[in-house]
Amino acid sequence: MMSSPKIFKKKLLLVEGKDTEAFIAALLDVSGLEDFQILDFRNVENFQPFIKGLVNRLDYRESDIQSIGVIRDAEQNASAAFESVCNALKAASLDSPSQVGRITTGKPRTGIYLLPDLGASSGMLEDLCLNMLETDAAIVCVEQYFQCLSSQGIQPPRNFAKAKITAFLASRPELKQRVGYAMNKEYWNWDHLCLAPLKEFFKTL
Amino acid sequence: MLTSIQIENFRCFDQLKVDGLSRVNLIAGKNNVGKTAFLEAIGMWTSGSNPAGLTYLSGMRIPLEKVTLDIAQELLLAPLFKDFDTSRTIHIKGFLDYSELHSLEIQSDRAIPNRISLTQEKYEAGLGSLTSNLSQILTLRYIPPEGQPTENQFWLEGNKTTLQGMSAELATPSLSVAFIFANSRQNSKTQSEMFGQLELVSSDYSLVESLQLLEPRLKRITTIVVSGFPILYGDIGLKRLVPLSLMGDGLNRLVSILLTLATNRDGLVLIDEIENGLHHSVLSKVWQVINDAAHRFNVQVIATTHSYECIEAAHTAFSDSGHYDFRLHRIDRIRDEFKPVTYDQEALEGSVQASFEVR
Image 1 (cartoon, chains in turn blue, orange):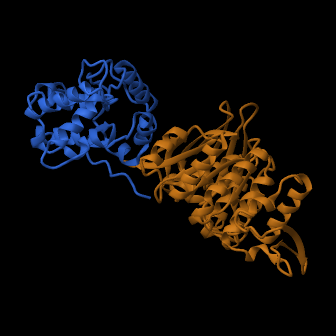
Image 2: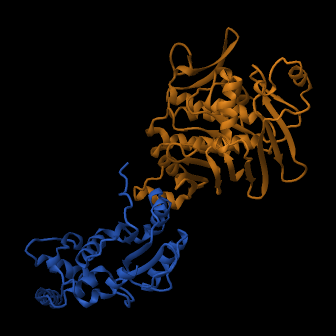
Image 3: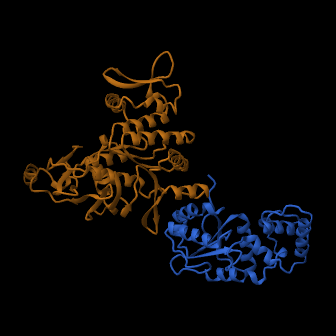
């Protein structure tokens, strides 16, 4: 049996998928935040079994965990996504916050952050990534590329945000096909204001 | 069915409460967290004021025929009490079907009851020391959900290896119990008797079909008496029958488990280290037949394990069965406190998917 890594930090960030894990790890790194351990719950359907299994782990029970943050995509409906995470936290006998971005006061503290940002009613990690690229010269070319496709009557991609990010990554010196593989600090604007609420979430957690 | 058990001052446990017991339960945990002691506590509890529970204990840890007074004192009676502190009272409280509370209290007393007049006379005649000739006196007090408690005292005396008692009033919870120990095989006579009982009352249950999981060639089991000694034999298509005891540890382990389940209808079967002798590749199927037998004979199973494969196989088998009446309970020792944790289907599924350690 390949065991999951031991819990070694008092603050846990539970994230959806490898791309989000890589993104959050890079953001924590550039922000100088070292007291978090990231665990990937892979997909939203798996979150409730995952968190129920996590709180039963011996190393979790021994660790005196201070806080747990859950970070996932808002997807089509942020309210439904928030409610789903709250229900899973309750099923694992954990407190659930009153709204996205808020942190509970219990032990452990819990908080939920839905990507791309606090006020979004829908969206995903790639939307946040696009916001970070707002001032990047390549993004103009990416926009023009999709306009060109549209003008040719070519069927648009089902997920524009992912398609634009893929096109952006294709513009880099080293070709990376996924966000998770492309978390080089120099590709992205980590100082962009769109990241401020997420950084604040980490600091409060 | 036993749904909850609370243990105080027994063996290593100051206090331990396990809720949510299901039809089939696996008990996991690191070494020395008290997995076997947990089974022993349940065995004691099911025995009520009957000292048979003590016999189960000795069978688990030391061969009964080797029990002497000193051994009994050191290894059987005193260690029942947390930290060997015989001034404590052991409490074991169990709920049957969530609401029916049956309690057992165990106390130790070195004072000699006045009722042992013969021994008292010997003492007064200078024939020996009373206290050196008697083990601890154990008082077993069983408190049923309704009606009066019953209380009995038991001890080991001199070189006798049987328990002596003051009263014949033996009351127990209405639940029969059977033990299957970790490393000892059931003897042939016991197995033959159980097989005979099974043949008598459950002719529709095919033990052979279940055992074919491990020995596909097995066609038939029969009892043959050799020199007055009953032995179970199997027909595996050879020119002659083969004693089951020669067919490997795995098959014999499964024979023990299934025969015990089948002959303990409406009862409780406690199994220490259930995976012993069973190869991981057959564990899912083994759980299928255990699940089938537990339902067919309305038996509850509580078993200890060290094996991840065993836990995963049970989870898979019960998930596939469509009726998940299985729970994993792990006893954790956290900062010197025993803290159990129970996995339902969802928690175990999440743990398996994420490769979390559950043992």
